[in-house]
Image 1 (cartoon, rainbow, N blue to C red):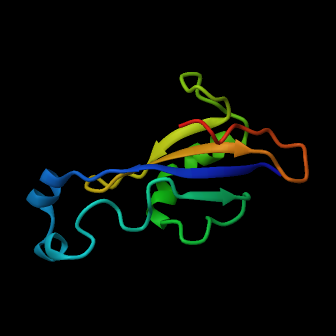
Image 2 (cartoon, rainbow, N blue to C red):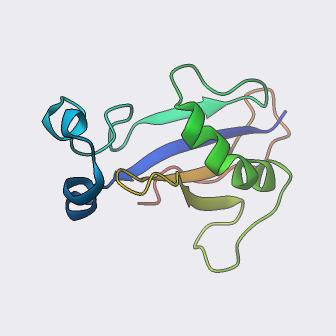
Image 3 (spheres, rainbow, N blue to C red):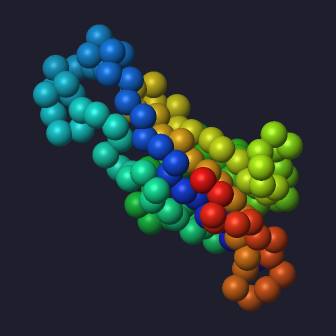
Length: 118
């Protein structure tokens, strides 16, 4: 079975857009700032079944195409490592950038990539 590692590379925040278009409740609430559902550097292992526990459903829907591409052996020739992708959720105020990579199956047979790539 091919397993994937999904790593949060960066949570970003478009402050000017948030201040211009965000509701008053949002601007004064605890979630004003980068996405509170993830942490930079946070990692998830995916085994091909349901999304990992705690993974944001919106982000999952946004990056699912890249997940399937990497799972099936696809690659982007502009990245340093094969069998990997960089993708993000499409939240215009608080986008999150993810690295998706194949990892070795502990039972053998799977393609792997190094987790040391920044």
